[in-house]
Length: 117
Image (cartoon, rainbow, N blue to C red):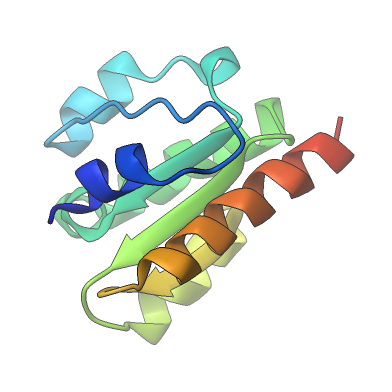
């Protein structure tokens, strides 16, 4: 099952809203910083244009530090992980991920966001 559907199907106690973009360009054009508490990205968005993406994530983190950015990737890449954390990523997770871990990561993102208010 796709990550998006799995996130939608999880019974987390927070309202989970899933929006999908298929390119960095689309993501950059449609992101509304005030709309999110937890922002989940997958490696398709990262691999396409990582430098621009991490610059945008850094801007998001600076403008709205309560947003928790979760990055899910198919292959671990230390260079991307380092850049992601520098840009303000809260969690870096290698796929595949079990539903229990997925739920925990999302809940931790919401919990951390609530304490950053």
